[in-house]
Image (cartoon, rainbow, N blue to C red; front, side, top):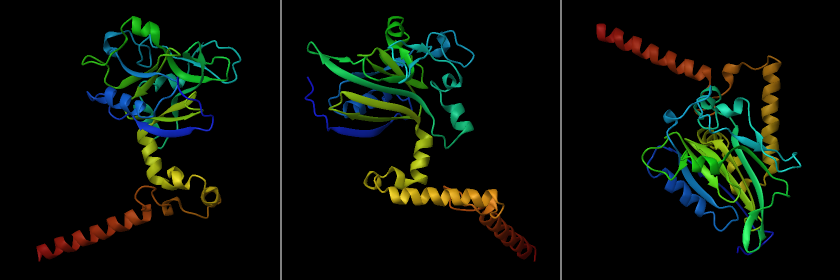
Length: 275
């Protein structure tokens, strides 16, 4: 049994990476184990190839219909999940194409656990939430979720939590943002677009640096600067071409000037060659 410490806390990110790689399931599971002794019991399973199963209009297997439970629901009843979110829970490529810098979470898992008769079980009476989850047991029984092998769907893996019986899809290049408290009897995680998250970390390193996490004054100043820039854009006092690209630091004017200089240089070179 896990010793309980109500002040214990940890958080981190697990980068899912390329799910088609042979060692991806083992690599992700090792990172989960490295979190330490926590109440949930995680395993990585793979999906049978989607091409062998009937698919819905979003390209997802008909048998992999997600369920959800919101904080606001006072009962433990699961509900079927519908809507546009279902289109990206197994494959994030459409999300990345439409919103390269997105902050969209495709799945959530917030659960509390409790000791019971020498075992650790989910505390369904405590507030809990999960979104875009799959009912793992029937999928395992039908060999849709299986121990990772060669014949598997390459673009997604499944994070199975055996105590709740839920499976959370992990699409290719996603990221698991996790935290635990109370010696791991409280566990929360969300699945993000890992590529977009790395872009944001590169653009805003201060927001993601743990040592600067409590520097709220600088964060508020940065927010104020952004709001001021938006106001000047709306008032027509700032040309959008003067805004620097967040990754390169160049403006449209800079790019045009560099292009113009290169053209002048090439024109002079061609003229000299002709002479």
